[in-house]
Amino acid sequence: MSVESSLHYQQQFFERFNKAWEAQSSFQLYRGLDTTADNLRLPITEAPGYVLAYDKGAQEELHDFLQARFVKFLRSHVPFFEVSDDGHVYFGDWYHRREFGELSVFSRSIVQVTDEEQAILPQLQAFASDPDNYLDNQIEAMRKSVYSEVNHLQNQLESDTATTQAQDSDSSTPNGGGFRSLLKTFIDPTEEEEEQVEAPEHHENQQLRQQFDHIKADADRTFDANKRQLQVSAAITRYEYQAVMSTYSSIAQFENILGNLKEDFMRALEVEGDNQHA
Image (cartoon, one colour):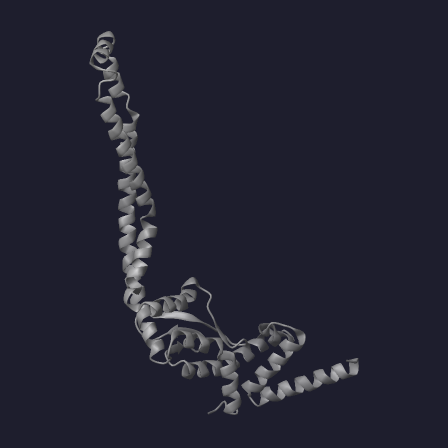
C-alpha cells in the first residue's frame, strides 16, 4: 500500500468512526474498533487508545457510552444476573449473593479476577454432577485436609505406644533364666532400678501425646468453623444452580452463553438497528 492509499484509508476510517459516534451507533463503533484491532494485530482493549490518539478522557467517554449499552443487553440476556451501572455483575438478588465478575466493555465479556469469582463455575459443575451429596463431599474433603496432621500424629502415637508396651513386656521377663537374673541382681542390685529410671521413650511418648492433643484441638476448631462456611457456601451454590436451571437446560448451556456474549451482543445490536433510544 502506498503512502497516498494508506492515508486515504485512514481518512475514510476516521470519517466512518466519526459518523458512528455522531449517530451514537454502538454497532458501528464496535466494528471500527474490531477492524483496528485486526489490522494492527492489537488486543481489542488497546484499539480505543489508538483510534482516539491515546486521549484518556476520550477513551473513558467512549467506554462509558458503550458500557451503558452492554449493561442493558446483559440484564435481558441473562435474566438472573444483577448488573450495576458501573459494570459489576452479581449472581442473583438473594442474601449473600456473590459477585460473578466485571464487564470488559471493549472485549464484550465478563472478566473474573478474584479466586471467589473464578470458583463459581467449577462449584456449579460439581453441584450439577451430584446435587444430593455436594455438601457432604465438600465436608469430607475438608475433613481430610484439616485432620491430615492429626491422623499422622495419631498413627505415630499408636506406633510408639505399641513399641513401648513391647519393651515393657520384654523388660518384665527374666533375661537368660531365673538363676542368671538372680545372680545379676545379687551382683548389682541397683542396675534394675537405674534401667527403669533411664527410660526416655516414656517421656517422648508423653510429649507426643501433648502435641497430639494440642493439634487436634486446633483442628476441631478449624473444622467447625470451615463446616459452617461450607454450609453457607453450599446454600448459595444451590440458589445459583436453581437460577441457572430455571433459564437454561444445563450448566454447560449457561457456560456456552457466557462464551458467546460478544457474538450475541453484536448480533442483537445489528438486528435491532442499534436503536439507542428504544
